[in-house]
Length: 282
Image 1 (tube, rainbow, N blue to C red):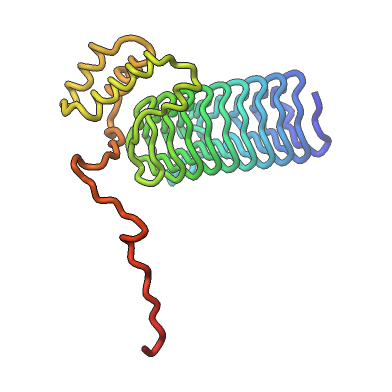
Image 2 (cartoon, rainbow, N blue to C red):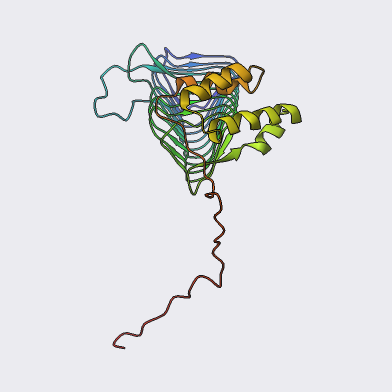
């Protein structure tokens, strides 16, 4: 274990084996740090933070800060983090509002510079948050989801397994598993095909996901009929994920971005008039 002499480590903190704590880092009372974690310079672990093993917290990251809530109580919950996570510079993870709850993050997640996980969020395993990705309170992010740069997720939304949310998107409804969100329109533009292939899903499994996707977005069925169809006809893994996710939706799901049937007009450079400059006094 290597603790820099300028680091402030409370005597009540529990530090595992082979832990490195850098210059001017602050480890408050009640913090638990698992084996082989690295806490870089100026990082702060607040009271109630529990880290598993092999986590890497980079410079000036703050984990366990109080919730950003106008009715934040004097006593708040904690933050519980699994193993093998990376928190890059200036990331922030806030504790839960209630003393009996925790903000939780699983294993193998990668949070890039400036990412923010608000109070009472639940993050699964192997998710990626690009620079400045922001989760509001009570957001759920399932395994292997990808949240691109400068994405803002509204409180109480859910991001499904292996969903891909494009850069600058605003998410105000639930994102079903396996889909891609376009960062410009903030709508669904199909399955996350590249992510599915990288995750090792077979051609047959992807074909089943496409069928289920069409049931959700293009069948014309009612919401209840969609759920019944998914749970009846798509029971194998991974497509059964849809049938588990959708019944829990309370905010609605992100809609599909499709050009209306029969639409043929496309803007070209020739169709867009050049701006006309006006001379002052003319």
